[in-house]
Length: 380
Ligand code: 0WD
Ligand code: CA
Image (cartoon, rainbow, N blue to C red):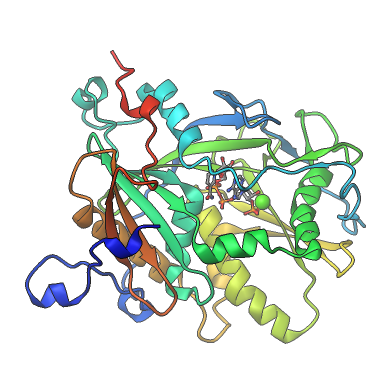
C-alpha cells in the first residue's frame, strides 16, 4: 500500500493547538457514567441467498427450536461433503447495506421531516454491527488491531473495515483444524434452526455460509445517530415478540472444565458476545458447549442484559461502560477528523494493541469503498 507516502498524524500536533489527531484506548480514561444508548429500533432487514444475492426481504430468517437438554450434536458431521463455504477473500465492504439504503431510505426515521425529502439520510454513521463490536472491545483487546475506512457523503459518515496485513496472514495460513472448527458454529445453527415457523431443523442438509439474514437497526449513542446492520442467526417462533427482541444469537464454545477456563470465558469470550448482541438489542444468546471432538455436551442460554452481572465476580474484568464510552469518544473523534464531504476521500483509522488510534488520508486510492452506483444520484 501507499501508507508511507501519506502524512501520519501524531499526538504532538495537539501541543501545537491543532485538533486532537490521535485517540487513546486506555480503559481507565473511559470509566465514567454509562452514556445514553437508545433502545435500538429495527427499521428493516434483508437476506443474502446461497450465491450472496441481495433480497429486500426476510427469506433467510430462521426459527429457533430449543434442543433437548443433552443433545449430543456432532458438529463434525457434514464437513466437508455437505458444506459450501463463502469465499472470504471477496471483500463486500458496505455494499449490501448500501443496497438496502437505496431501496429503503424512506424507512429511516428522522425527527426533522424536511430531511426525509432532502438528499441527506439524517444519520451520522452507517456501518456494520461487527465493526462497532470491534470498537467497543478495543480498550480490552491485546491481540488484534483493526483498520477502519471512513468517508463522508451527504453529511453521513460511512465506516467500512479494511483487512489488516496480520488478519490476512492469519486467514491465508489457517490450519485444517481451524478451518474445520469454523464450520462447527454453522453446523450448530443447522441443528437448532428451522426454515419455517412450524418446521424442524434438518441436520442432514447442506451448510451454506453464503446465506444470511441481516437486521437493520437505528439507534443513538449520546450525540451520534447510528444506522447499522448485523447478521442474525434466528428468531423465536412466538410472533408476538417484535424485532429485535425476538432475535437469538447462537454460539459455540469449548466446554468449561477448570476455574481457569471459566475465568477466560468470562474475561474474553463473554465480552465479545455481550458487545455483539447488546449493540442491536438482541436479548438472548444460546451457547452450545462442545468437547475437543466437536460433540455438544451442554447448552446454556445467556440473557445479554445479565452478562455484566455474571462477570462482576471476576477481578480486573471488563466493564460495559468503558466499552460504550470509548465508542462514544471514538465516534466523536471520527467526526472531528472526517470533515470533507467527498466519497472519493478515505480517512483510514488504524489501531494496534498498546497504541493510540491514528489516521491517514487517501484520495482516489484502493481504500475508496463507496461505489459509483451508490454515489451517483438515483433519487428523485
Ligand atoms: O468485515 C466484515 N465483518 C464484513 C462483513 C465485510 C463485508 C460484509 N460483511 C457482512 C456480510 O454481509 C455478513 O452477512 O457481514 C455480515 C455480518 O455482519 P455483522 O453482523 O456486522 O458481523 P459480525 O457481528 O462480526 O458477525 C456476525 C455473524 C458471524 O457470527 P458469529 O456468531 O461467528 O459472530 O456473521 C458471520 C458469522 O456467522 N460473519 C460474516 N459473514 C459474512 N462475511 C462475516 C463476513 N465477513 N464475518 C462474520
Ligand atoms: Ca452466531
